[in-house]
Amino acid sequence: MNILLIGSGGREHAFSQKLTQSSLCSNLFVLPGNAGTSQLAKNVAIDNTDFPAIGNFCLEKKIELLIVGPEDLLVKGLRDFFESDPQLKEIAFVGPDAKGAQLEGSKDWSKAFMEKYNIPTAAYRTFNVDTMDAGIDYVKNHSLPVVLKADGLAAGKGVLICESNNDAVNELKLMIQDKKFGEAGSKVVVEAFLNGIELSVFVLTDGTNYKILPSAKDYKRIGEGDTGLNTGGMGAVSPVPFADAVFMQKVEERIIKPSILGLQKEQIHYTGFIFIGLMKVYDDPIVIEYNCRMGDPETEVVLPLIQNDFAELMLATAKGELDKIQLQIDSQSAATVMLVSKGYPGDYEKGKRISGLDLVTDSMLYHAGTRINENGELLSNGGRVMAVTSLGSNLKEALAMCMKNAEKIQFENKYYRKDIGYEFI
Ligand code: AMP
Ligand code: GLY
Image (cartoon, rainbow, N blue to C red; front, side, top):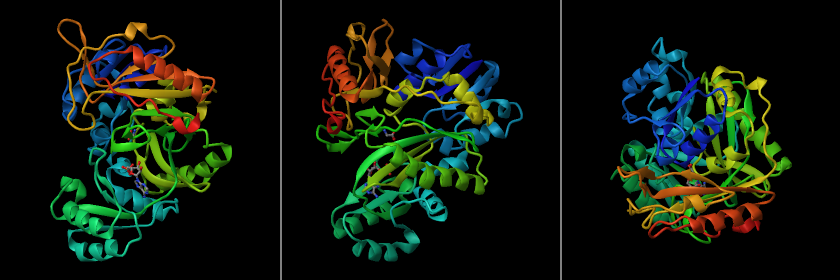
């Protein structure tokens, strides 16, 4: 089977590794991929916003399975484009259509969805330019902190936690009137702050059946001790020690089942990943957000724990046959540490030579922002450069191995958090 995977991060390198381990995979193409995926698959240089070009590529290469890594193409309707074409719709597709991708693409839509199906989430109201006065009134009198969220995709920057009502009023105006986040902020969700511990749960669904993948905890802040700016994620651990069977039972009954049923009732045939961002408040799971994809770097700890044939799992997802699959999960713990460029998450350095990969033993390296130049040298090419993943009989062991190997990889001004998973060891 020929497979096309879309994306270019550590997540896609981890997907590539799993897919190429499958005997079902004859050829893997990654669009656009990175230096890591180029060692396992064929990178494809097509503009990913050019849907007809992606379609033509699939027909030319006889692609039978298409997996979409990032959210934006799903929100923009790549799947709808494939479904509207008699030949392309035959390709098994992992990822929801534009309607399903609203779980991530519109916070207002996903909040209304949760309200409608009684899925626990923070109390909220949504405002736009026509309801500005009511919005100002609402945030002026809201308990603190108050959370403001741009409705649409804002590259992970659209969430503001305001410590004063005045700040909240100003930010609301900046978002709606001054278009601080562009059109993504033309509607703003204002919601109550949840006090608790964050974790993520990943669900794979074929629209009817679902499988719950290992839970994960992501470390979003740039600085040790969870300080400084938010990043895409500086490291992750899986499974999350406090997400025990009792807690996961609550997640399944209160959140996963009603979410899958709700999608069905909304006539959304959702096939793909649902990433549920949760807050554990006392002992209860409350939804912070949904994403319509896997997380990065969460994928770099979740996928290594999945022992199934991954191409078979993806195909079953696309074809509505997940009931035929028994998930096999490794009982070990996984940890990943992201090596990042100086300046990240602001403007960062690029083009630094990377060395030391051959010295790494007992860890997996997932390239994120890397490329190979004309001389065959490996260079940094993004803020997040490479994830170092290790498995161990417990988190402490896995983390120690990550730290040992993170040190061996060299590039100028490399930075990584040495305290990933600190609260569990
Ligand atoms: P989101 O883009 O919705 O994941 O929000 C980004 C981050 O903001 C989350 O990962 C949380 O750390 C934080 N956050 C979002 N909503 C809330 C909330 N209601 N209460 C507390 N923290 C929140
Ligand atoms: N690591 C968070 C995300 O993928 O959204």
